Image (tube, rainbow, N blue to C red; front, side, top):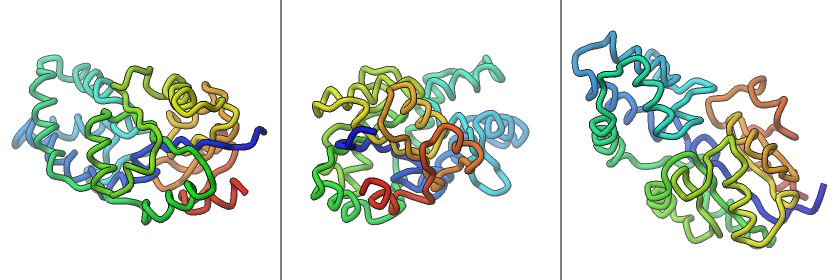
Length: 230
């Protein structure tokens, strides 16, 4: 393995607590799409990989792993009459006022990595603009060398395209990158890009069994990362 010089982080489930941040918004969204229709709301929830009884996202959830368009495509397969623009407008309303909940003190954690000379990036299947806003709210945006969303001009994960974009931006090779993520999309992207180290974390909805086969190592959360990189 080449010496790791850059670390590409997934956002939700890796840096941000997915359920604490977005479960309430997801409930509000499906309620607004089909008001007073629990049956239809449950179909949307099941298709997206959300357990309405526990208010938690499931491992492999398309809402967790995929892009907004991926979710729309799944929902439209069940309800062709849905208007995509309407869903997007309701989504903006449902999530706009929510605050991202960090999984640790991100400023302190990332600052330590910076002092060791690592290039840092975020690679997410969420859109770039809200991602920048969320990282700014968390006080850590300036610590990243590159932030890439699903609409930043690269193919979204599980393609390795966005990781290669991070490499180009900071001037390193894929073999010098550690990809850190909580989902199969993250780790498949790492494999597809040919990263030097594929790190799975169990801080998101996915289980150990779901990600262990495609990760070089699996950690409980990002706080143990420094030990792996030594």
